[in-house]
Image (tube, rainbow, N blue to C red; front, side):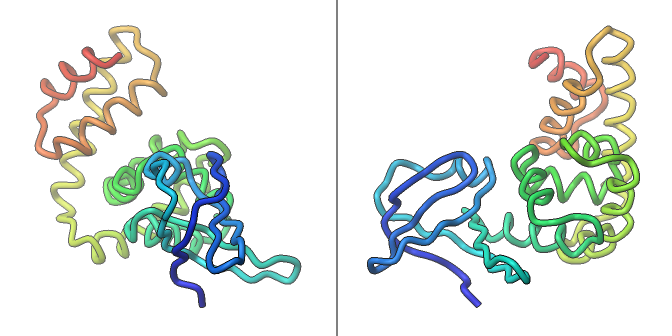
Length: 193
């Protein structure tokens, strides 16, 4: 299995890159998260996931091992393919995906294009225990964060802010300040909305 590619960055777009490694150009699918972390340096190193199907062999590249680990967890869920997992990691950071699963935040997972209610619930049901164990997350803290988030979102909705936009802003605040109270979340969200 190919675990990483290191070489000269030949082409770069938001969805893929071409890396020249000793005269061979590797076409690698990437997420927007990885794209944003690639600088304009000539030499790059991407961690990879190599997938072999009946009709294709594809490489997926990641800037960090955390992103690759979340990608692999996501594609282990029935109904989540590589493109959907890549879309999730383009819409949310690996930390947001991890915390969304741990906190059972169906709305956050469902906010990703192409993921409906049932798929979001399946992701949470299939991965919650794994995420809590792998990342050593205290379930009581996760549940408390989810309660604070729900209260903050309700308050923002009453104030007339769109639910989808509020959800993203609040998720970002909680990711940066896991111990934030409802009041702090609302104040910070108002600054960013």
